[in-house]
Length: 359
Ligand SMILES: *Cc1c(COP(=O)(O)O)cnc(C)c1O
Image 1 (cartoon, rainbow, N blue to C red):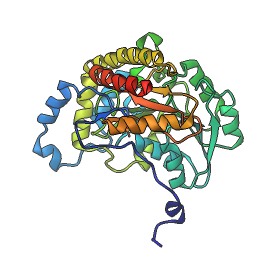
Image 2 (cartoon, helix red, strand yellow):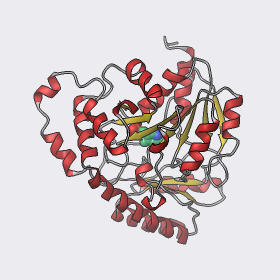
Image 3 (cartoon, rainbow, N blue to C red):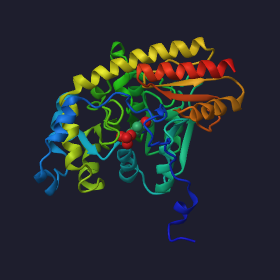
């Protein structure tokens, strides 16, 4: 028997995708950007001065919030910087959910949400995603009936990559009586032709927060930097009350600033990922797999009705040095989530998959 709270003793904790140290492995299991961070970010890293490490950083990452405000055409007061997007997810509960009161999610989605709820002592109200992975029409009604204070919606959806439109999100925000957190971890990979931009909703709804992260789009998962966008009345209590006193460190703030300053460079990788998405999706379909259209940097690949097949393909791939993600979940156990790699990595994966399919 330990000293931890009962709720903590009972829970399992989040199970992250494997992070193998070997560089030989082709790692397509945790949706990292396969391309390196841009030159501008690396130059900023090399220019970091000793004095910026000696002093405490800007408590609220002021310079970063300034540039982020310019990028998104809002004010710094609409922005909170956090130590990775996951921290903002936790702060959503700390700030807006009374202990013991429920949160709402779409099932399946990001598996961290229920873990955070467990830590907080919150039950989880789940609404199952539509068969085509779109947002169920009864979502707001269900959440309102259960007095849910925060509903988490990942858009583009993970693990399917399905994108809900601006109108759908706006309707949801206006219908929900609690706060809507739209987790935009993958939004950078959305096809520009969709003209998808939720930031203009921030000033229209006082119950909407958008989560952004530099982990995926900007190839900076190792940096741990994310931010939230929302109405001042939502952002203010997070920034001034519930966030850590110095949530983001001096190095992270400097590099995050550089990442946004040079975002045209990152945008080139987004385009490369989109091209690979089209190519790999077609190739997987040609192999007989079913793959929904993705607006993200991963594909959800349905491998067939036999529930053991997905797991067995994942294990075979792993033995051959290719990591992809398998989820033990009723809607996902016949599927594999494959992060898009470099063109060369994707071709090598396809070659393996062709051999496996041929048996
Ligand atoms: C990656 C990811 C995040 C945030 O990741 P951080 O690395 O903590 O910024 C949030 N939500 C989803 C769905 C993600 O995939």
